[in-house]
Length: 246
Image 1: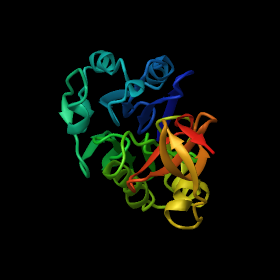
Image 2 (image 1 turned 30 degrees about the vertical axis):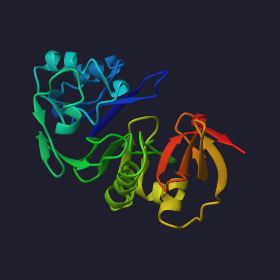
Image 3 (image 1 turned 180 degrees about the horizontal axis):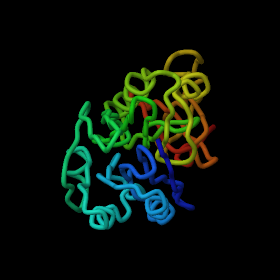
Image 4 (image 1 turned 180 degrees about the vertical axis):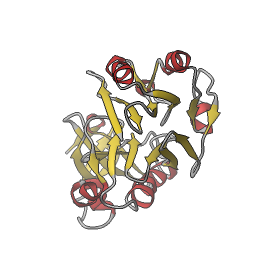
């Protein structure tokens, strides 16, 4: 299998090329505006692109995906919930458990809501999982609200992704790859959520609102992410810049 990625210099968001082999078939996944190295790889390896896949609708993941669809004359594919949030049309929708085939690639959609309602991960040939903004190396994605959104995000990480075989390679939406096994053992959020480590609560404010800081962890860009609980009992994962520690 061929897996190649480009990383945006500011957003650090990834776009991917996945193909079964040189001279074979493959897909492009997400768009970050820095796709030229992948296009050169496609030409050099004579790869036939069959689909453009979207993991979710965030702007740093959909740059010029319409142009990629037109360039290769292939369907643009997203979940129905993500499609409803886009300001352009997709050609096909894919939902949890559905499979797309591209040559020798079997690409299974895994619903991983929380960071966004229609967020998908893509498991390819049962060996490589493209986790987008749900799970990163050493950290997890943020939640945009509280309550049910956090619960769904935590379940996506723990009940969907962490149940994959430990040797499964993960390819996040930002920065470097990892494996399910490595994240199970070392990711501080995963360790806390599986109760391998205990939170050390401390008072804080999140955008001026009183809250309890449960976990102060790393983020993929060298800053921090925080797991917080508000007075209502609702919880969230937020960027460290939103948190004022005592």
